[in-house]
Structures are given as C-alpha cells and as structure tokens.
Length: 173
Image (tube, rainbow, N blue to C red; front, side, top):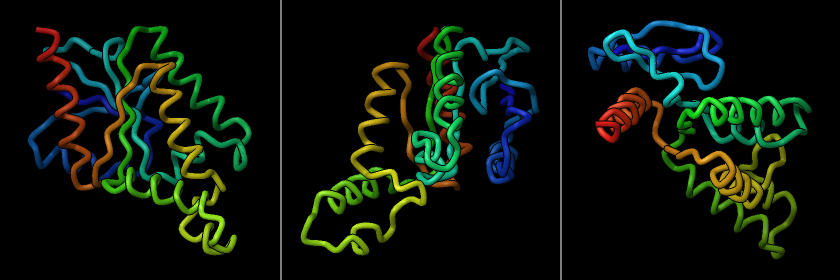
C-alpha cells in the first residue's frame, strides 16, 4: 500500500511521520477531492475512497460557515460533490478525539439561557458556528453525500487513515 497525500494538504508532518513509523510508503499527488487516498499494487483507489482531514473543529466550522470566507462552504461542498460524482467513498476525519463531547457541550451552552452571552461563547469557535449547527450540518451532509466521520487524536491520524483503507479493501474482497 502507498498512501497518496494531496499536494495542497498543509501541516500534515505528524501524519507523514506516523505513516513512516508504521512502515507505510507515501507520496504526494494532485487530488481532485480529499486529502488522502491510496494505491495498491500500483492501482490508484482515488475513484473509490478518499479521506478529507480537518485539523480541529475550528477548521471544520470554518468550512461549514460562510462568516470567515464566503467561498469556504461552497468550495467544501464542491469537493464532496466531486467525490460523489466520481463514486468515491469520502471519509471526514477530524483530529479531535473529544469532538463529539465538545459539540454536545457547545449545543447545551447555546440553549442554556441562564448563562450570560459571555459564558455561552466561552470556548466557541471563532466562526460563531453553534454546536447545534455543527451537529446538524454534519448530519445533513452525511445524508446528502454518504460519508463517514472519524474523530481521533492527532497521534492516531495515520493509524485511522490506514485502518479506513484496510477496511475498504477488506469489504471489496
């Protein structure tokens, strides 16, 4: 197996180091969608499976929300549309092992009117995207594009990437 990482993928040294630690080869390539895919015996799986990595919930909220960059949500959506049109399975990997808890806590804080605005916004994402909006957006996009979501620590990202590709190959046998 050789993992292919998109040339546009930034700040992924920990992923590449993790792949090296696991003894997995990798190379850079120009991917039309996703940040990672793989090839096996020289045959690319880009049209079959890819992983879109987000470094944290803040980055993901920026992709779902138009406040910081008006084109961000549209660009993010088009990436998922291209993968869907190609028939590729997309996996959204968020490097935050406690993301579920953070989104639920944020949703609870949004709804708690006994808290002051300052208390509700503490720990919020710079985009102002609420926990409820994050949960709803993920659920809506999962339904629309049929992707899986994986939350993990940065330390486990390489392992989760390899695990996803291994599971895909095993299902295809």
